[in-house]
Amino acid sequence: MEGVMAPLIEIEGLALGYEHDGAHVAVLERLDLTITRGEFIAILGASGVGKSTLLRVLIGLAAPSAGALRFDARSDCAMALVFQDARLLPWRRVEANVALGLEKMKLSKAERHIRALDALRGVGLENYAERFPHQLSGGQRQRVALARALAVQPDLLLMDEPFSALDAPTRQRLQDDLLELWRETGKTVLFVTHDIDEAVYLADRVIALGGQPGEVRASITIDVARPRRRADQRLRDIASLVETKLRSE
Amino acid sequence: MKQRLAALLGLALFLGAWELAPLLTPGAHALLPVPSQLPGAFWREFQNGVWLACVGASLSHYLIGLGVGVALGVAAGVATGVLPPLEWMTAWITRILRPIPGLAWIPFAILWFGVEEKAAVFIIAIGVFWIVYFSAHGAIRNVDRDLIEVAAAFGFRTSWEKLVKVQFPASLPGILVGVRTSLGQAWMAVVAAELFGVAGLGQRMNQASSLLATDIVVVYMLTMAALYGLIDMAFIFAQSRLLTWKA
Ligand SMILES: Nc1ncnc2c1ncn2[C@@H]1O[C@H](COP(=O)(O)OP(=O)(O)OP(=O)(O)O)[C@@H](O)[C@H]1O
Ligand SMILES: [Mg+2]
Image (cartoon, rainbow over all chains, first blue to last red; front, top):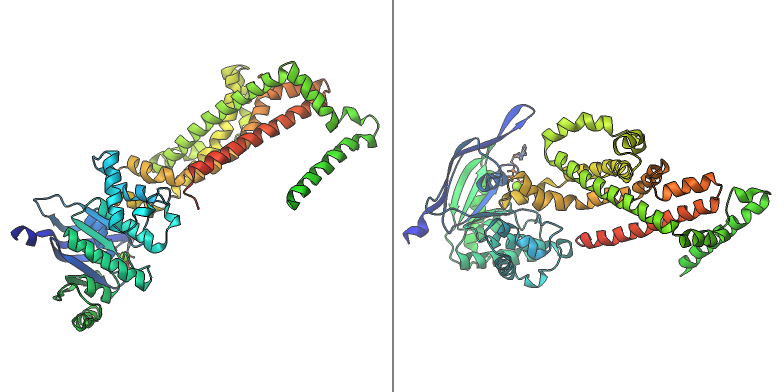
C-alpha cells in the first residue's frame, strides 16, 4: 500500500505569467498542489483563472516563471493531455490519430497497430479505425481524442474540459466510461471542468482555483463510495459547498 | 443530359462560325485557317514525325522545369515558413526578385546555358518556383497552432518533428493549389522559352508562322490545350488520392 499513497507530483509555489504590451500579467501565483498516485482530481474555477495553463505547465507546453514541479523519483511519469476540442489531425485516419503518441516510442508498426486498436476498443470505436475525423460525430471525436491519450498508457491523464462541448446524455455516458477506465487501470486523473456536478460526481477530490492571479482556494475531498448516483444527496450537498467556496473572495 | 447537349451545341456553333468567318472577306484564308483544314495539317505534321518530336521535346522541358520549380519552391517556402530568421533574411531578396518575370531572364538563360534545353528548363522553373514558393510559405504559416500544440503535447518538440507530423501534411492542400496554378503557367513559359530557339512546340509554331502556315500554328495551339487538359486531369486525380481526408 505504501507505494500507492506516494505523491505522484508535488507542485510548490508555482507561478506563471504572460507578457502583455510590455507588462507582465500574472496568471498563476504561489500555487501548491500535491497529486497522489491513483487519485482522480477535478479542478474547478472561473474562466481565465488559469486551469488550462496549469495543465500546459504540467505537460511541458509552458514553462513556469517560479516554483517547483517535483515528480515521483521512482518512475518517469508519462503524461497525456486531452484537449477541450478533440484536436484530431484531419489528414490521419482514426487509427493513425490514436497512434500519434506511439510514434514517439520505440515500437514496431505491428505493436503500434495493436496498441492503437486496443485503445480504440477501450472507447468503443474499434469499428471506426479507418474513418477520417470529419466522418465522426463530435462525441466520437472526443472519444478518439481520449483513446489517443490512453494509447500512450500515461501514469497521469490530464483532461481539459473534455466533455464540455457534448450534449448531456453523451457527456454522462463518457463520464461513466471514464470512471470505468480509471477503475480498471488505476491511472491518476486531473480533470478540468466548469461543471460542479460533473466534478463532484467524478472526483475523489475537488480543487477550487480562484483569484487573480489564480491560486488554490479550497481542496474538498469527496467521501462518497463508488459507484455513485448522480442524484445522491451527499453529492448535492458537496456541490453547494464547492459553489460557495468558488464564489467567496 | 441537357447540359451536355447545350455544350455540344455551343461547340458546334463555334466551329461553324469559325469555318464560315473567312468567307466574309476575300483573301482572309491566309489570315485564319478554318477547322476543316486542321485534320489534314495535323496528319502531315504527324506523318513526317515533326509533331511527335516537338511534343516530346516540349513535354520534357515542361516536366523537368515543373519538377525543378516545384521541388525548389516547396523547399524554400517551407523553410522560410518554419524558420523566421530565414524569412527575415530573405525578405528583401524576395521582394527584389519576385516581380521579375521569367521571360526577362531569357538573356541570362542563353548566356549561362546556351540555346539548349537547360535554358528552357531554367525559364520554366523560375515561373513555377515563385508560384509554389508563395503558396507553400503561406500554407505553412497558416497551419492551426492548436494542431502544432497537439504534436508537442505528444512529445514531438523539435521543429523538424513538428514539420513532419503536422505542418507539412496540414499545408499540403495549400501547396497543391499553387502547384495546380503553375501547371498552366508552365505551358506559357514553355512556348516563350522555345520561341528563342530551343527545339519544341514553340519553335515549330514560330517557324510555321513565318511561313504563313497558320493551320500548323493552330494545330500546335490545340495540341498544347489538349496536353494541358490531360495533365490537369491527371493532377486532379492524383490530388484527390492525396487528399482523401478532405470532406
Ligand atoms: N498565450 C497567451 N498569451 C497571453 N495571455 C494568455 C495566453 N494564454 C492564456 N492567457 C491568459 O491566461 C489566463 C488563464 O488562461 P487559461 O486558458 O489557463 O484559463 P482557463 O482557466 O483555462 O479558462 P477557461 O475556463 O475559459 O478555459 C487568461 O486570462 C488568459 O487570457
Ligand atoms: Mg481552459
